[in-house]
Image (cartoon, rainbow, N blue to C red; front, top):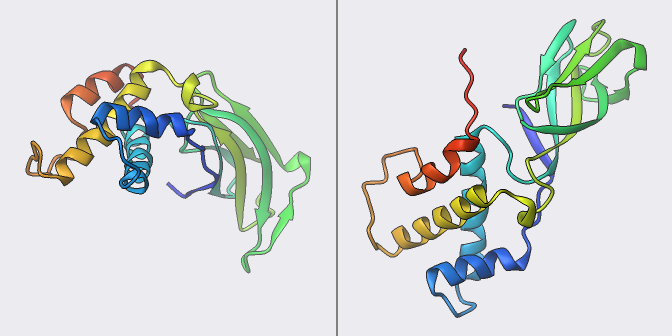
Length: 185
């Protein structure tokens, strides 16, 4: 995936408080590391489900070949800008007749190029299941908290496993599985 997150989702302080309550942590000493674990858990949630949990502004670079090109990030809420990129990296506005955009019902954002007037094309968009933490479905939200707590406990050696599994713990996977989208290739 050739995606850059331009404006990441911001987690409210209540998210960190929720994780600290789950762990029974009352001090401020671990706030930075716990916040990092929450961010990592959100990334793992996206990797497992195939859907970006919280809305963020993103950009993907696509080839400018004629035809439809699907964005790899889902669910796309809106495609906001399409720019051409010249071989030297200079960006320029594409005329409106050279491309079309489409949002499928499953959240796939697609762009169709009619002619190759650019070397590559930058597509900016907003993607995510929920606009903010409190709008995120309970199963996803609770899974993020549980995964961050799991990683925190492993750091301390509490119930550590061998660490070779790329999958989240079964308790987290069970919460996220209803949201998982897989594609056959």
